[in-house]
Image (cartoon, rainbow, N blue to C red; front, side, top):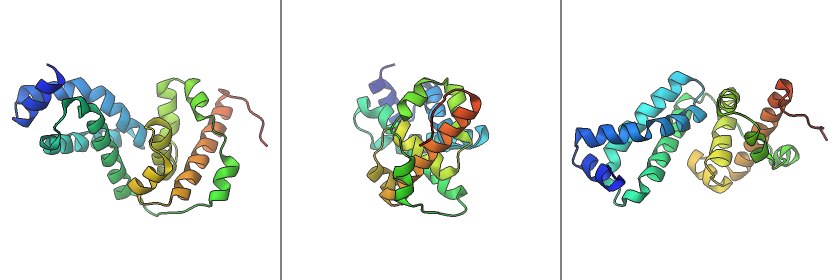
Length: 183
């Protein structure tokens, strides 16, 4: 089935089209959820809640070529909603700390690791760090967009990214994956 066939079939509530859409994208979207979740069960909950939203809102999508980006956006928004449901306290950090910790080499760090290793390290990050890291580094949002999505200041987004990268570097150093000099 083409994207158009899948979209139109799902809009008609055709179970075969819904099953085909689910099967076609389940691995990719579950991977996205695993990056945002603290655990495998939380990722599965996120994934299922996201698909319920996808099927509930699919009628609003008009262009089949936008299907995957739209579904990813729904999953990211679902992850953010789960984050807020589970968040115990909202903390802001100092932007000056962010700039002192930021190095801009996150792409190089990710390139040196396997997917499973990276997922395990990301799962260990505090919620805010994990969310911002995923949104910025992996999903390509800018700090203004992240601030709007998460209801935080742009500076907080920058600070949490810097702290997430610092935490990731320290874990990588501990594991012997990277060796770097601290300034």
